[in-house]
Image 1: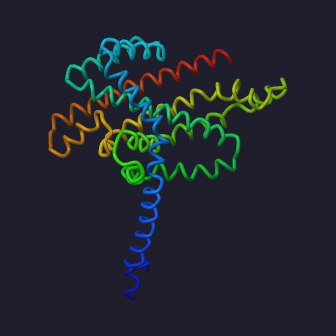
Image 2: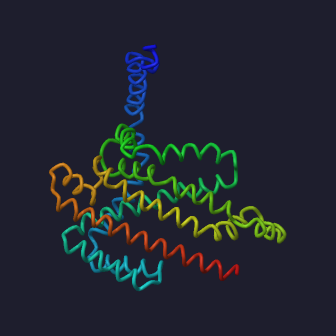
Image 3: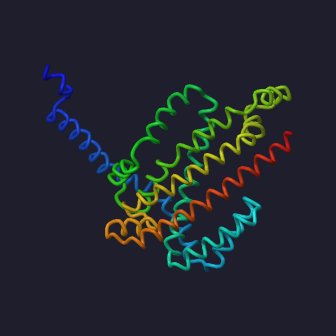
Length: 295
């Protein structure tokens, strides 16, 4: 009965051979196509550098005023605007302004990329059930895979730097916007779609004028979750060269600098609260507007 205590396996030699074969094939692919992949992502790097320069090199009163204006236009809440301004001023007062601006620029670019890729995928999933059956398991894997694992193939392909970190963040954070876009469109009332068909609307007109507007609050919830996951991943991505608040946190962990870790961690929390409150307020405003329009 001793065999019951040992689970049957391939054995260390066979497993080692499989790992060496897979790793060797991936290394060969990176050596052959790595340079081409780097050139492919050059526009993404330029976009990130431009947004980073805009935030880090602009006078801080203009940056604070611009962010406060965006918060007001999205939320129309004086409390949120005042909270945003106070949070940014405290971050600057404690000497974390530059790192915070780099983190905000990274989150902005990651969110834009996630929306550009995720929205069309979510729309396509809502239209074709077969595609949804294929993509859903992939999203399940992406959401349950340990975040550190995303760094391995990205570093092997593109090395260490901003762009590999950005790609790792996008992969980690994109599933919510895909799922919520698909869900929001599928939850649109069938009676409204039948009414649109009765008026002779084309498929594009139904999507553009009925489904997407009604799904916007749900989509905004997905955007909110994508932003939160991006912020969570930024600290981990600092291990491969992503600049911003993640690097001081990593340094604090390595050197046991308690105060540095707490301050930079609180700065990340402050940014997360700003993004969360603004995006949620904007989603609620959209919901109220749609209720008035369709009420």
